[in-house]
Length: 457
Image (cartoon, rainbow, N blue to C red; front, side):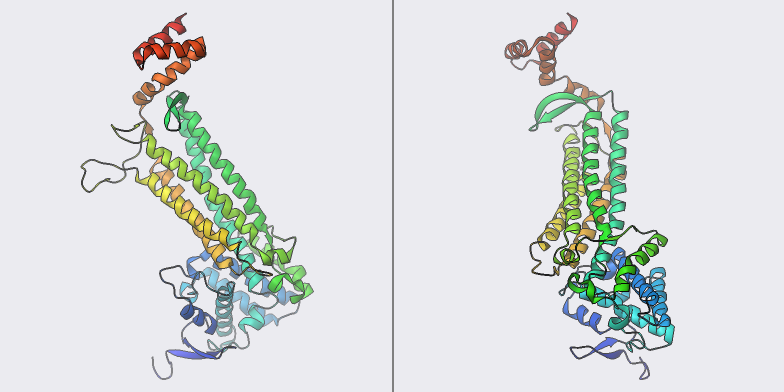
């Protein structure tokens, strides 16, 4: 840097003075957050583009509403909206370095956005230097008529709605794959098991259809919770007090935001939540979605483990299905192939459940009038959605769609000792079948002959 262009600039806030990189679009409060909350390998704000985009949309709607009601000079408000449009069209991840979770109820998220928009709007709209905050100030103008609490909460709801849509489509795709395989394998019987012991024979369509139904039940419940996110708290400034924003802003912000979201092809149809104070005290709608997805993750874990069991072997295990061989399974055993894709799904499910546990904990620790843990809530929720979507996608495309049954093995299993005795019970009754079982003493050929005799006459 030349003396005319020093590497840093000095900014001031209520704490005092601090240096900021001269080329940074962010400002002093963002810089403090970066230094106070080191990443330590965790994600940045910019690593959650859905949340960032959602908050930018809220800021744009706020600026448009403030122009409409005469709360801000039109030229200043339009400079803010242009700055939002530029960031949406050309993301600048380096401008949003704040740690994904930090103290203070998400204030660092909000101020990071406010500072970037103020600097960009001032520079491109008025030729002002970064850090001058004139004529547009991060708090006085970008943050006008709303606060961190209602802006972040509204952004979280929008981001979660967008993210969930992708996951729900992927899970429905998996359910459809299972329906297709069930229809394709319909003539083939398999041995069902209870408590990991032989039970009765069923069709593959029965088993796969059951899994598909469980997945759809989970997604339907989660979709209902996601719909609840359309109730937002914008206008419930600070702790739910609508009196902290102008009445005209309170009346117009949601219609303006809905119009804007529809144009951007993002979830619209948002309405104000029934009780703004409740929205400040707890993030229950987000927690409800996380809880539903926790159950979905456990269903996916169970199915992935079933695939591992049914594919176990190939000679010493069940060997009922054959999974696609995608990579060598051992550094020491030649020819060994492990069920790595189902195992990846299990791992994704475990990680998702861990995020859900952290999200649930935030509900226990929101004291009095404000729950300050929404950064943990939204990053945990977006993480678990992304993790599950990755797991389901690779399970579908790299495993389920290419798996095949071992017809001979399944036919033999489906006519083994216990299924044959069940068939005999259906034909001759429980007492007769019990007597045959005692006489056979485990001789499958003997039992099969008795079944054939019963079927013949």
